[in-house]
Image (tube, rainbow, N blue to C red; front, side, top):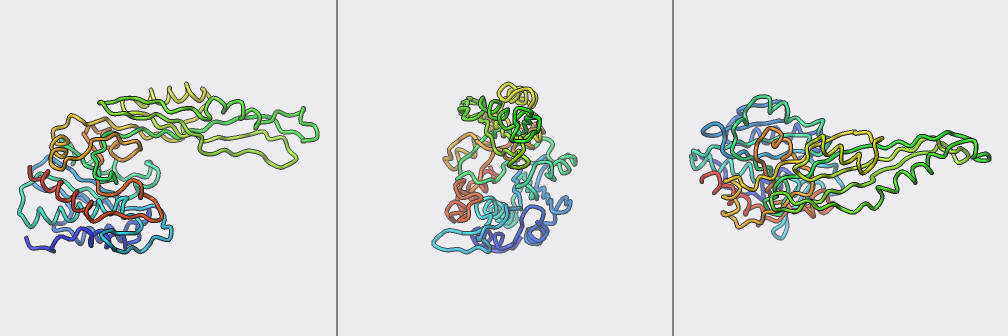
Amino acid sequence: MPGPDPDVAARTLALVDIHSPSGGEQEIAEYVASELPWPPTWRDGETLWYAIGPSPPQVVLAGHLDTVPSNGNFPGRRADGVVHGLGASDMKGGVAVMMELAWALARAGSAASAGFLFFPREEIAVEHSPLPTFFATGALDGAGLVVVLEPTDNEIQVGCVGNVNARLRFKGRSAHTARPWLGVNAIELAVDGLARIAGLPPHDVEVGGLPFREVLSLTRISGGRADNVVPDLVEASLNFRYAPGRSRDDAEARLRELAGEGVEIVSHSPAASVAVDNPLVRRLREIGGFALTPKQAWTPVAQFAELGLDAVNFGPGATRFAHAQDEQVDVAALERSLDALRVLLNT
C-alpha cells in the first residue's frame, strides 16, 4: 500500500500543533482517523481502535491523545534534533510513533498481529477514562502484550504504583477567639493528628526483582472561618502511592494503618502487575538493549492489568520533560522507539 515516507519528527510536530487538552480531543481524533492507512475497526467518540492481522492481537500499542493545559508552550517547533511543545513528551511523540508504525506495516503488507488504540481523557481523574467502555467490547481478550507509549526515556518500565487519594477531617467546636476555652480548635486537633504522617519516610518494596517505593504525602489542607473565630473544621488531603502486589483492600487497610481509621477514600486507581516474565517483554528488551525499570507512578497499564493482561510502559518521551513548560522530545529517541517496535511486531 502506498503512503507517505516516514518522518516521525514531522508527525510529532503536527500532533503537537493540534490543541487537545483533556476533554477537547475532537480535532486530534479526527486527524488520527484521517491520517491512518485503514478505517477504525471500532470507534466511540474520540476512542479509536484498529485491529490488524490475526486475532487476538499479539501486541497492542496504546496512546492517549490529550495533554495537560498549555503553559506558554503551544504551538510547537522543531530545532536541532528536538521537537518542542505541549505534549511532545507526554505523549504525542508516542502517538506519532504509533501512526508511523501503522504506515510501515501497511506499506510492507505485513501480516503482523497488532492493535492500535488511541484514546482521550488520560490526564484527568480515572473516573473519566473511556477505556472501560472499550474493554467491554472484548477486543483485547487474549492479547499477548499491551505497550503503553508513555514517556519512559526508551526504558521498559514495568508495573506501576497504585494511587489513592483520601481525606482526613478534624472536627472541633467554634467559639470567639476572646474565649477560646469555650471551643475546641480544629487546627490544634489537626496538628496532633497529622504529626504521625508528616515526614513519613518512603517504604521500599521489591516486586519481580525491582524496587518500588510506597509513599504517603500530605497534599492540601484547609480550615478556619475568620480571624476571630476558633475553627471548628480542618480538612487535609492525602495521596498514597503503593507497590504492585497489594490488592485494593490491602492498600486501603495499609493507608488506615498509617493515617488512622477516620480516613475517607476519595478515589483509588490500583497498581499494575509486574510483567517481567512475558516473552514479548524479553524480546523487546533484546531488540533494543533497553533497560528494565519499575514505574514509580500511576499509568493506564493498571487498567489493562485489571483485565488480566500483561502491560508495560515504553515510549520515546523523556520523563523529566513531561508536563514541563519546556516540554520536548529528541528525534533520535522517536526513531529508536519506532525501529524497535517495528521489529517486535514482525517477530
